[in-house]
Image (cartoon, rainbow, N blue to C red; front, side, top):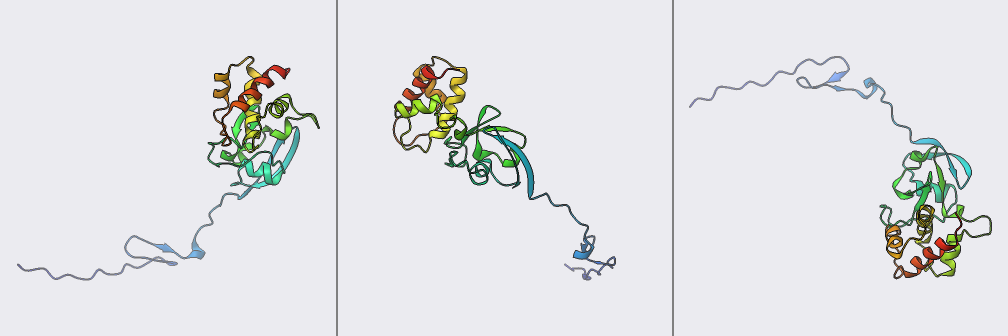
Amino acid sequence: MTVPPTTAPTEPTSAPGTTGRGSEQTMHVEDRPAVATPAAEKSIRVTVNGTVHERTVSVRRSLVEFLREDLGLTGTHVGCEHGVCGACTVLMDGEPIRACLMFAVQADGAEFTTVEGLAEGDRLHPIQQAFWDHHGLQCGFCTPGILLTTYDFLRDNRGADEAEIREAVSGNLCRCTGYQGIVRSVQAADETWER
């Protein structure tokens, strides 16, 4: 069998300022059009515990980092950073959220309550006092998130039974021991908080 002779492909001529083979062309860097890059920082305005804050933040900064590092509100704890443990729970426009799952820039215009916002001056909120009185604090790491979860729950629920309370705080993990002291504290807060 005879194989036909092959001929080498000829180089196409390239347009000025480009090099390439066939239909592919590569532009020199100086000939490339400018591409707009997204802003690395953005100004936000939030209200936290009744105080308005205006800051310029990195678009990649989490809300929990913003609260702790930029505003100095270290009561909001960083736990799993995956939205599982509930340690970073705060209230956003009155609803509990995980501050580790949100970027600070997403919070622009929102109103937040952190654990520091529960007390009135030196006077503990009835929920905080109940946790103190009934040993619901334990090591204290999960407590700020549980306090805010409890606040949200008790606002709309009176006379909740143990099963309902356990369900309400089930998204907040406590690694110290059982939840009995926490449940007792929530029950006591339900009785003493005048809402």
